[in-house]
Image (cartoon, helix red, strand yellow):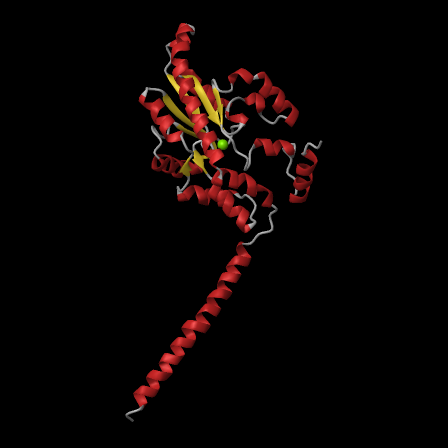
Length: 285
Ligand SMILES: [Mg+2]
């Protein structure tokens, strides 16, 4: 009788130990493996690794972002002087800076990195879920420049092709990251009828004079670049040459963009077809 509690306790200790050290890890390993298998997709997005790493791990990317925002400040200051020569109707309008959001003021590279790691294709559901996290960090230099513009009385507009359903989360994320004047009016997302951003830019132009446009995509500057072939994108960029570093300030984005869609001629292709197009597009000696 005296030994019984000891035997029971001993049995309990052994059972607990076996469960803790052998069975539980076994179950949890199986569960993790199952989750891993479910999360592991088949998308061919390995080619995006260097673009994402360039954004996340190269100080050169950071230098380029600072360069863009330093240049924006110089341009905004220069515009103040040159605007005196403008026709009165333009001169009297308050000034505005128009910035794109994704990969211009907010860094979504962790979302893209997650898709690469799990070999998942881009999906609206995944994109919305990332937006709901309100976790995107500011692009280096962006917060300082836009606060500088705001303090000078220049209106800041955030013109993005994010969907309207993402508005609150987008506003929360921008505010959390330290951006100024984030309101339902200044954050202009894509209306279902919008083709590009020109309608929204023209709406802003009714009341403001846009001094500077900033973006990682040529479509952030003008609709002359929209849905153009690679050759025509070059031609339009050459035509607008004097605008870059003046009214247009471009930021690098090697992860994705219209530059990539142009490679596929804006068609919906399979991963294999896209891979073929990318290789075909390489310029050889
Ligand atoms: Mg963008």
